[in-house]
Length: 604
Image (tube, rainbow, N blue to C red; front, side, top):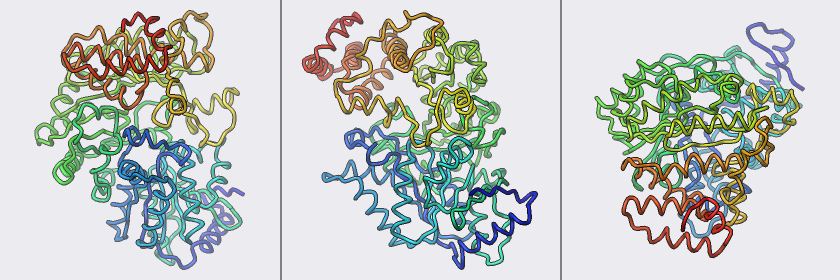
């Protein structure tokens, strides 16, 4: 049963019913001690110990929980952050006898019994983490009588989507409180309300509450953090940076740093000016971009550098260059105040915002890597997905960034949009070749709940109703391609017959199987073939370090990767004994690789 109400225009009958359920559920409880939990990114079935030992899994600080922690602590509450993802990856690398359940649940039980929290709050950002989140929730509910609250991007997207809402809330049956959107203020106000016997329930916002008999109430009112609330840095002391880069990875440019470098993250802006149909940022953060003061960002960076010895950060911003004047000021102050931290923008930059002045300031402020958000090189598709960029923008941004070879520049591409033809996709290939940048990350479209493209594809019958935990990923450390490769070490994407994929009728829409071949074609043509055209020594070194990472961590049984690594080592006059032997070993174990290398005119 759902009861949806707004405190702006309350129906008294609904308000009375809500208050009755709320008071009955809370009783005399006081929430003074709050445990905030970041669950493992993947559940036991998804987790692969070898991948963890290769340090390929992401290991980010739970930045949002850090902000919530500071909001609560300044109100006088006792808060502890439990980063189970970091704990799991640490133990996977430290222990000989590894058992997923024991590692996760024994540590969870130990913290709960020691801290004895009055409330547990969990965050969840990605759909792939849903089962892991549910397992942690159910374990707490079955072993302890502690109220449970959840929040984050995945929670918001799943509840905001009519297609997934009821099934999602039913699946998380042990959750008492669901917080939507950016909720650090709403959550702190909620705690205050609970702790005052006659607290005014009108202070409750962006909350979905499970009452008695599974009655669900939803409060629409929303409080958006602005001003000084934005300037509040997360509590980094409760998220020490010691392990983040040691046992996992942050962003896409860690390979450019030394093995002992320390990593963390910083958020400078919230929101994005764009309204891309495949993205849920606007639904979560709202339509406007809100910025912190430049000095508050600098102060956070200086703390990370001097107190936690952080060497490199990834900016979490979805629109880092929203205000070009502010961006230039920020990067200039990083240089002027000697922050001495390098940084990257792995979430992508909007190409139309890139100018000579911006890039020069970024370089002087420590930038070593950026992604450009391009997605498509076809004007029709760009309009269809409401991308704030044109082919001219992409080419102009590429020309500017190529003047700064120290900045490794990559491009985000997406394929498989509704009704996107082979011809449309090949336009993307042609524009990418003309840009001639360092690497192209090609991703098949994965429509996520609470995005316009998800709703449209559902309406058109292109996707069926599903629980959001069942969204499949083709790439990444938890992706389908990775899982397939782990089951069969000889089953590598570049071993397939992909070079003829664009010989199909250009007006046809690729099938799912053809999308995989298109992905392989683009990955090889845009990323590997161009390696032989590199002449700049800085770019050769960057490419060699990245391929060394791919060969040893991502695709250790891919002969093409090892071939091009060997090529780069020769070019740079490095020791190539290992790469030579590896190519020979791969071909010996699977002669199909010899055929594939020959097909690609790669002379071993």
